[in-house]
Length: 170
Length: 79
Image 1: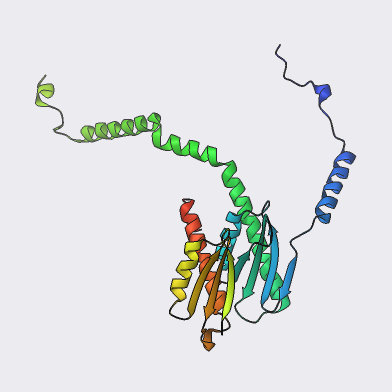
Image 2 (image 1 turned 90 degrees about the vertical axis):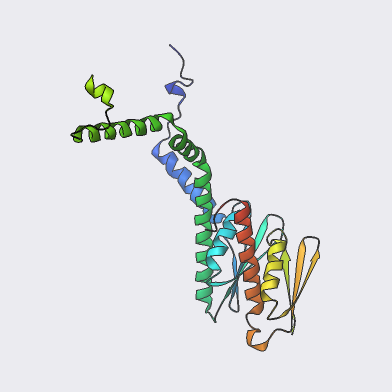
């Protein structure tokens, strides 16, 4: 019998307590991680993004959606860093500016996830497109359907004009 | 009254900044200088009625033009 590569006794079975401890450690690590720090000024919210997490493409995608709502200015405070400055079009309270920055970062995450999903499903999309356009099976099916329609039409035609006279006369 | 804006050419397309300068040229005197990775734009003789927003609006326009060009080169739509 061919070996499957790992026997059952090699599989590490994690107990409930271990999983809980791991989850707690992960949450603690997430909580200790620096979040996007936002500086609030007059009509202005500014923060710096790490480009290793938020790619330029995602920042552009988000900025494009916010251009109508506020003024957006991008800067490069350091290597792999993108500075974002959002200037409210009118007077705004600190809470409104914080909300604006929060919405921007949320949309940014949305764009990042969208890009990742796009990348991870690119091959299967290409496969389906190729199959839809170039599959001979599909063409055969269409040919069959057309032939079927022709047959039906001929059955309905009492004079069967489409039948050559040589064939109809025997 | 003059205002200066510095764009990083990693984030702002040079042609996009020129396009923004062309679009705003009828409102204000614009000087564009390039030095290494920086594109420095000086907006001069800003009309008083636009003093509060012109610089920010110019930055927005430059970013918009940059994004459109970036997406076009990547073969994608704007959205």
